[in-house]
Each structure stands twice: as structure tokens, then as C-alpha cells.
Length: 212
Image (cartoon, rainbow, N blue to C red; front, side, top):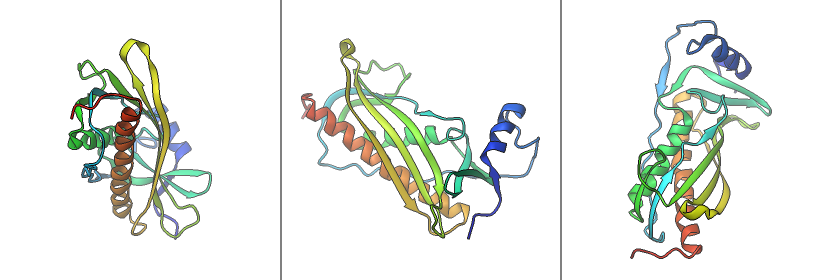
């Protein structure tokens, strides 16, 4: 079964350019707002680092960065669910999830969003490449997130410590938008966990001294 109530992504992009915040020619149809639940689950075995780490606001394309919920009903076809909005744009959701995961781990001296005013000696830069419900020929979509990550040393311009691409695809329990939103919560949690663990392990492998 294909998802109902879809809007072609090209039409959405045109509406965003021409109408600012209005949707598709000024439609005022009511929308349901979804806020996936993400609960941190840090690994106690992760190494501890004497770092102050900042997390950048992820880069994202116009379509990926919108609060509309993107879906791929067919390969190479991108649409959005009509009447469904994210409470926060996907790039904000990713930044929040990673920040909470690293805070909950207790493995850093300090961690904050870039621009918070903290003098971070290291930072994570993120490129959010995909955040869509992908059918991929299946009867139900999978919440699919793809992120490029770089860990950088801010001290004396020492540059990139490590880089990696992360992907998570969590099948939804059904085609209902609420079920798709729940799958995104699981995918966000999984990818935030993966990036947090990689950040700490890459820092330790680079020879940074532990504070414990």
C-alpha cells in the first residue's frame, strides 16, 4: 500500500520560495505536529575524555531541513505527508538527540551546542543528508536517516581527527504517519548513540588523555 495524502517535494519547494511560510498556495488545512521521543542510552564502556565539545547545527538541504515530513513512495521520488509537521526541523532533532546522548554519558568535561559561548577545544560537525520515510519497494516505509560526521580539534587549527558516514533505517509498524514518527524516534536514538560512541572512541584513539 502506498502512503496516502502526499505532496510532491517539487511543489513544496516552489511553495516555500513563493509563499514564505504558507503551504501550497496559502492552504490553511489543519496539521498534526509530531515530536518523536528519544531517550538517551549511553554505553558505560565508552571512554571518558577531558574535553569541552561543541556540536554544530547540522547542515541540511532545503527539503531535508523543513518541518514537513518527507517520504519516498518510489525509488527516486520524494514527496511529503500532507497535514503532518515535525515539531522541530530534522537538523534540530539530530543536534538535540546527540547533545542529550553525550550529556547522559557523563564522559566529557562539558558538551554544548556550537554558539553557546563555551570555549570548546573540540567540535563535531554534522551533515544531515537524509531524513525520510523510504518504502524501497516494501509494504511499509523505514525511517531512514543518513548523517556525515566530522570530529575536529579546535586547538591551533589541528584539523580533522576522524570522519564517518552513519545510516539508520528503522521499519515503521505500519503506514500511518504516527507509526512512521515512532520509527523516526527509534532511528534518531540509534544514530545519536552511534555518533556519540564514535566521537568518544575516536578521541581516545587519537591519544587524548582521559580524565578518569
